[in-house]
Length: 349
Image (tube, helix red, strand yellow):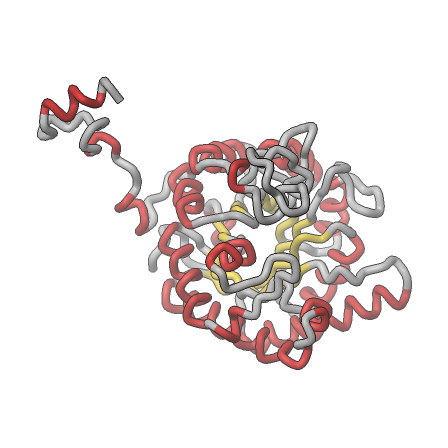
């Protein structure tokens, strides 16, 4: 077993301590040149499955307790946009098989994934289309033998509710997280605490927030959710320096350069606004102090952030063997075996 979490299923592990779930696959594969920003369809699952398996393993090595199948935006509507709807089933089945294989190899949890459809509307037709999409995906998740289902990034609480109903009908544990944009409420006008209370009452095992907001602007809402529900709470921010004036990473406006093709940093020029690993560790400590046990990092995450989160929670994942030790740096280090002239030169740097 690569990570140092307890054995057992999701709820057993949460009963004993924190569970870390690494996300951010869309952004990471876009950075690596295997996924297109804008469409954000996970075609890499079919075109380079070995890379998907490799990233799963990197995140587990860094401390993730969950291998989440890379089906985010791998649904019927997204594939329709790029003219590849016929690949819906193979993409989902392959992503689930890759995740399941890595999870079984490493002793971690295997999670299926549902996400916002971008089709939901609060009318009969909108509800029906969304439910149909979720039911077909959950069917494949059940057949793949996944341990639980993550339903995430919902701006409509009602869409999240439909996802939850589908998961419960399949008999699997459910982690359901909302996405809160500039206004601190769902698109129906519910506070995150109220929306999560409703999801918890409907049977969700874990409720909370993921994506959109960085650590600084997610944590206050997480506090309110923690106070409002008795079930476990999830917090998976994006690793960007959002603020009260710019609470969403989609609305950040200071990229540190004047060369943006569309005048905004989201999604391809966010680099100057990225949190460092120590800020992610601080978020993990603060959330854990609130008894928030399901933690992770969303779009923009890298394995070094997951490692810092794990270490902040008192763990030593395999990647901790290579955690920074600046005492050994040739010029800035303090190790007595370093050359004295190098240490003296450090004062001039």
